[in-house]
Image (cartoon, rainbow, N blue to C red; front, side, top):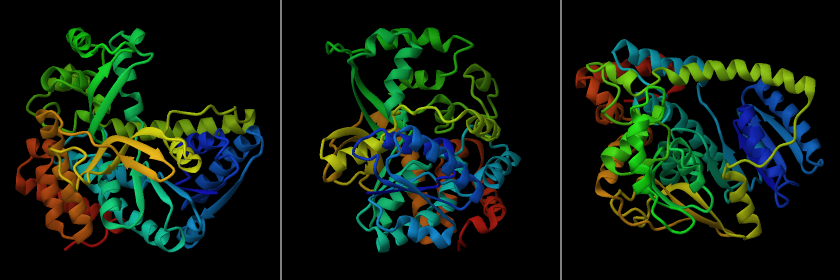
Length: 439
């Protein structure tokens, strides 16, 4: 069996996912094909993963493929393809995504999923992923594409609608959602044996139902505890608790992400909201710098002290591959096309995050029904942007980029239409060759 990792220079994540595969008897004897366009990062990953393979008993083998000219060989004959690329990296593209909008008074926290940052990230990533799909159609047409790259719904949705490649989008925020909520509210005694239902869209999927091991609804107790946390000046997960207060339900992704997915919290006319809700502006660039420096230090320590044994993580990838290979069913929260209206009050061409059954035949999205109307409405404010960004990528029409930005909740709450269009033009120019030509 062959498992190909696209963007294997993301060493920390490659170590986690491929390390998970090495922990699974059904996967450990695979050929792990590492692909990247950066020779130094690829070599760092090879060194770490070879050391990890040794600690795990020496099963399987690792192959490395560098650059576009070796991409087809990396993919050839693959059974599974894991995608974790970042087109344009932190420098220059993430810097552009933050600094150009800042000139127009538009501030962001993460900028990788929605907002103007998410739009631009999608537009520079989709052409690369389409090239992957073309290669896969030729050399591994039956492989399952497991996408971890953000913006999840835009990229997975494009692959699912405009390529023949079987694609599922994966995000660890589903696994962590209820655990983090209960821990934050000092309800850790309710963790064991809990049952939950989560559905919506990536980074804004809703914890629709949560019950303890005896079947008791936990939301009444959750709601009784949120005000004290929201009023705590040192607590940093306030936006999601506000969602419970005003919309009735908790959502999957962190407050620093969700602060920029709506029109409520990052407002130049209300600067006091930033401190009140502990919203970390420019968080993603800061995080990138810290991660880059942290990895340099960690890599040196690994070289000096050796690689520690890896314990299987919560990431879905290895569990999905294991379920397909063995035929033993496994349940995940996955990003799939809303074909057949898995969520009845969201569009069929939207990429939704729903419970999925994985078995020997692949990944099957499960029917959820209708979301609470207010939750569907919140999701639609994001889906509008996602669908228009995908339309821009598919048609290469600049007007759809303008429209995506104009309909973005945060952008539209801060800027007028003319300013939005000028900002988009500046971003396109600043990205240069990282974007295809739009007309």
